[in-house]
Image 1: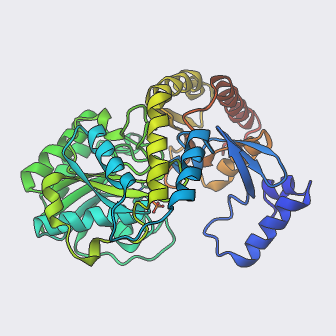
Image 2: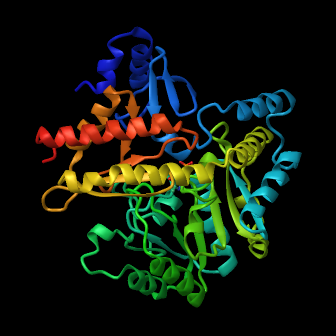
Image 3: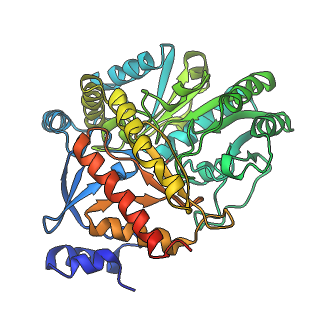
Length: 432
Ligand SMILES: Cc1ncc(COP(=O)(O)O)c(C=O)c1O
């Protein structure tokens, strides 16, 4: 069945050719995103035929500083000419500078274990926690996503949603994510306490401060207090996955700063380099670094000079353009503008978010998530208006996560377009 992009691509040959070649030679996990991208600037992606799309995904929370920020590009070009890669057994100027800067952002006293992807850094955090505590068990959350490697998939509770059969192990158990709409009287704080207290005693609890992929779901302050206090009580480390929520996205440097959390390990990736070069880290308290020894902790492409140059430039941009504050302001504006939809359209169950990590959740008359068709119709309608946004996997929630540099007028224009399409679908009886 042709997709909207197929229809769009009909108008010209280049992007169509690239999409067809991709279909022929690339094993793709999703059919949803056959946009052939050739460039980008700010919040805009430019396809191979020069069409401009407003990107409300930031490439999955990567392009926080916008696509191709000139300061990041300048740093990359300079470093590429000098030394893009260094032998993993050498150090270089950028590595310790990024590590020190991240430690400072966390209030000091953290050391970085270097990797390239978010999944790898989640695995690294789990290895450190296991080595440091001498325990194997890890508590995660149902529906949470922490990566595509086996360890990170075990730690997250969504193997079935990822289409991969991951056998369960006795070392992984999951508490329910604090999904307010589906609480049915459950006390999520109590449930996480109980899961942490089960045997075998856990090495760690792993969570996103705001569960992004399930649909921007967050607990109440009591939930996070339960996580922190009970973890301490049972001797488990608190690992916070900031792969998606870090670097200004939620209105703070890090998402956990919304809560009373004091993490032992913070996992970062994605927006650290604005996506220019893969780079990820498990930032651990100083004393945990004694657990890091042996080849099982090394990474050939962890924090190469090119990545560190991009990271330092991205952190500079985040600071000088005050992107966390900007995300907070534009996020509040969005919530104020979209909240009236809850009363206006029966299918809109919730409008929520932190900073520029926002979700509009839709449910059917029974309060259940919609199957794909209406969500696909919505994203298709938006694509026709030049807006690219994606639904989440677990709840039928439209995720709105634009680059934090998005122009305010462009943002309000997009929000109005989204509201119009949702209302129009309601009038057309499409939310069934
Ligand atoms: C919260 C979270 N953790 C970990 C990962 C894995 O990161 P990567 O795809 O870089 O391996 C992702 C990826 O989307 C993520 O959203």
